Image (tube, rainbow, N blue to C red; front, side, top):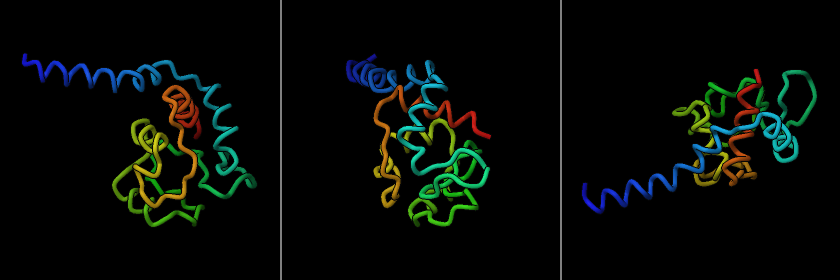
Length: 130
């Protein structure tokens, strides 16, 4: 194996390992707490009436088309276009929550979650919402 290939494999391992490790150790309760303090200001997690309305309801998010919550009418054109190609799953949420403005330029989602562990915890919590 060439030296260049070995270096590339080592770099890949360094870049991928933190996110993979964080996902393996995800904590739903910690994710709920982080969600409540950072995301719950804008997003509801229950289909019950009331709750925040600045962002879409995230109950049943996993597997849903991005920009696909029918009750939410304030999606940006950027997120709607993104949703034509993407459904929310652990991978797409991880990428989006890490850097929303980079993944979907033009989104109004203002709160990135740059910490791998915290992001994995929030995704684990969102995965429990039906």
